[in-house]
Image 1 (spheres, helix red, strand yellow):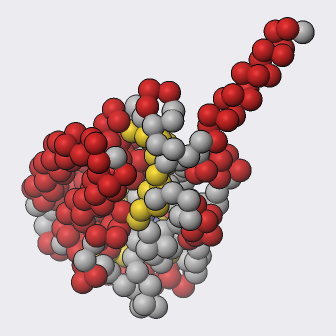
Image 2: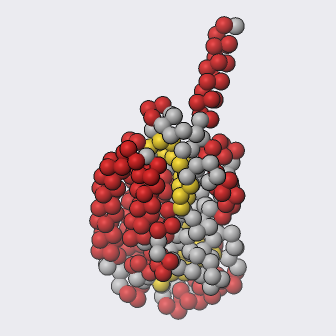
Image 3: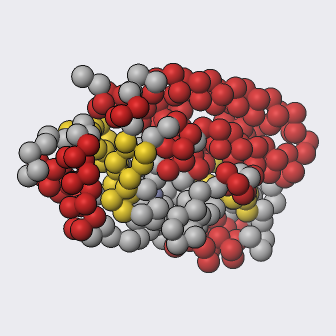
Length: 305
Ligand SMILES: [Zn+2]
């Protein structure tokens, strides 16, 4: 009896501790940050270093366009000192809950620093949220995280600045590496066809024509007409490869491949791309740098001999 009473008190205390909103209230005095996607969590981890404990709500293979906050997510958000999201309506089904959180703690959209004239807009006038595939735009996102952490925890401003500078130089190196790797692909082959329009910023930054079977949000389904049109184009232009994405079903891309085959042209499906989610934690693709490298390698290999 004594023991269970002790446990009850302990649980109560833990409950009280985890309900506290003040910064540095967690064991080890780390700032508790919650990010929506893995890419954003990775960015916060790199800039926050040991000073910040980061949780990502969306794991590998998760589609952010369709994702709804679970009860556990809401609890994690309520327990967070600071929250980071992509913005530009990437987290389309989480708008209400994120807005509610903004009343009681800082909530930052990492897309906020991207200059208006660098944002892409689709035919319906909707902003394309997939900014992470232009490494230079992701460098803008890093500035948002730096500013937010410095504002929240000015005492550790210099540490955040140093972490930021180190990571920003890795991003700058990545940008050079991506351009160099992709230069192996001849101009006529530079057409990137994927499950949904996640790669428009990639296309603009690195010189690819980009086509997705679904639009910039996976909320809209691709019709079979899109598949027939794309199949005509692929067969006519003798495009060698198309790609599936880790966070979207491969059904439509397989249907597209079959439709191209019926037009007497063989198009291969390249190695799966990480579009809206990173790979598993502990693998190279479980980091932003690794996912970008994986995608570039997959694209170069698919268009190679
Ligand atoms: Zn997407």
